[in-house]
Image (cartoon, rainbow, N blue to C red; front, side, top):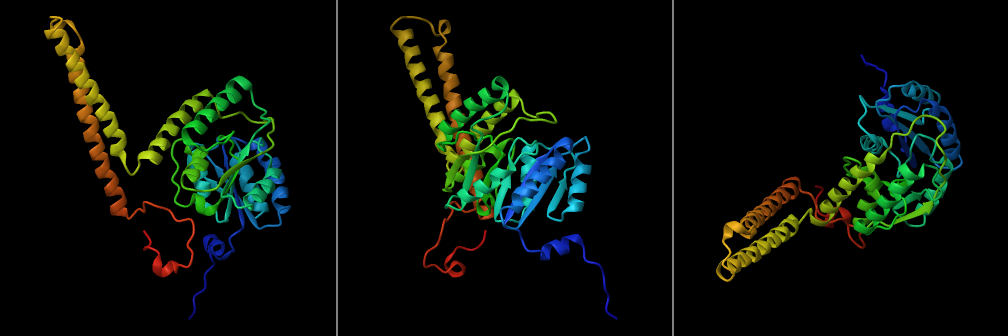
Length: 341
């Protein structure tokens, strides 16, 4: 006797065709903005003439945001909701949105109605010109100057200088990505805002266009000056990961050599003052400085060697590739490409 059972939601979604565009939004205590945001977002996406999905990631809201999101999902099957167990932060919520999206074009944005859904079409049009990443630029930003705009301007200038990827507004959440740019991207800290920089370093074509920015009318901002400090630390991290991930001894070894040079110079000066000027070593700090710098130099070099061993273990044990390919010409991808890793 044949057995029948109801199909689960997951099985039905698995057979549903993947949409062309996925928009995902972290949500944290935005109950007053959910309904107007979803209405504007739906109208803007319908005008595109493309299939789409909207993914809301509730990041542990303590108000009625999740109830509003459930109601929106009940009215429209293209609205999907992910509820995290607690507040993990915007980067984790963005990561959840990326992991559960199915479109070939991915659009992150904020849920506070300061980003304008009508700009999505313009971002996609620019993407269609051959770019891999299109970043929004809040040229006429509607935030407070001292606590938001001024620190952001300084951070953007510093990030552009250090990264080599020239963007006016790296902190704008409204962006457009081709899916392959975000494949296997792992986000930590505040690093969701640095995805265009990661992409630029990996050879992706990155550009930006001005987008609208509205004043917040409901809810409270979750950003402050402390976030600028965190962003700077995250920038240092990704700069290290980009420049020295496969050759950490270059960084630690250089620092070690500088310390050794400083040690030898200090020792030479200490000997000069001792035997030429007849100043005893216990009356000058040079001898102590020479010993400290020598120990630091040796430590840096050994740290570099240890880091080299860790890097090789990371790449070789997991088969991580050390290069990325943009395209193949006259190559059989199945036969000529290296095995999946």
